[in-house]
Image (tube, rainbow, N blue to C red; front, side):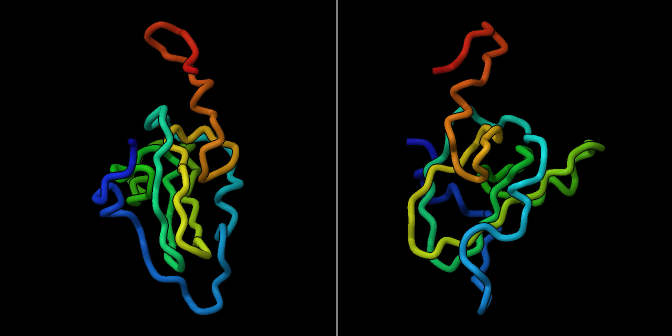
Length: 126
């Protein structure tokens, strides 16, 4: 199963929730226009801990997918305006995070990967 290895989240940006900080999505980065580079055509199952701050990679360049490693700061693409989507779970939960970066429900998978075209044979993935 994709993303179930314990080391998969070893280097993600993780910190504790600050007192008074709300749960759920932080800021408005999940609303930024555009989509990132396709990293994988499969979502990643991730177990998240209550009160931890997670930063989902929206640009597709992180080496620590599906989470941000700060690569968006060093990628030399002039039009890249995507930033990580930060969120704090209000309880321990297992979720499917988007790894194709095309989701309309950032950071969660919405099935958009099923519509990606395979450039080798130009067929749709189901």
